[in-house]
Image 1 (cartoon, rainbow, N blue to C red):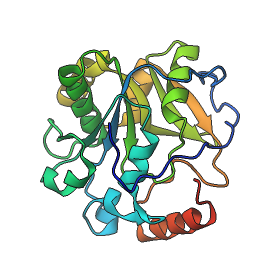
Image 2 (cartoon, rainbow, N blue to C red):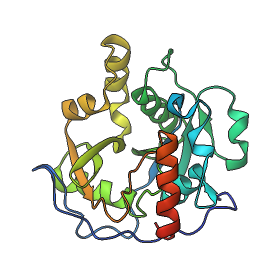
Image 3 (cartoon, rainbow, N blue to C red):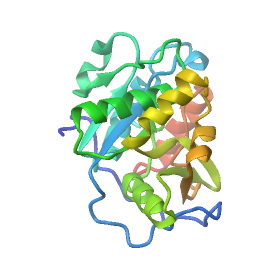
Image 4 (tube, rainbow, N blue to C red):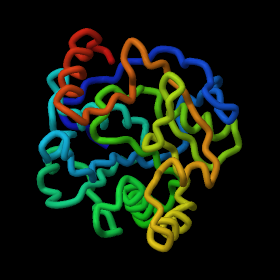
Length: 238
């Protein structure tokens, strides 16, 4: 899938750090090409701490954060954007835009469900979706491959990312076959915590170092945006 013209090639991240939990799948022996995967960018939040709007359209290091995220999902067979409201504001990315199907801003799990449903309908040949937030400008280039390796090594259906031993549940590998279980959890149970759903179904963890740049830093506040700009200037390959 062609990327926006502003997307630069992703640089290789640093070596992985120690495992934070017994269920971590080691990233040794990564496949050069991971299994076919749909990349799902979660942009359904309301960015209230940044005064509203779309955090992914903010610039870091001279590029929109969303362009940086798309670049790191380049190994995926398809990339989809989960966002609510008018999809025309993302037209420049050239990505399919899918809105939440669960009403009332039900949180990131609603976005995950929308992406799993999109994959089942539009790419039934693909069995997995990797999710990433739209406000994470420094995602690692080996994200997709390492999540697959972690799940495979641990024998779990899901794998999620961590940095410095801290888990990031919204950065995860999801099997499409879990979409009905997720729908029941959201609609029938009112479950909204991503970590609770991961724990229920079993999730391996792939851990990256948090220094010199945390690959899962989120831009949630003006201070975060300033810090991301500082890091991008100091580490232009991050």
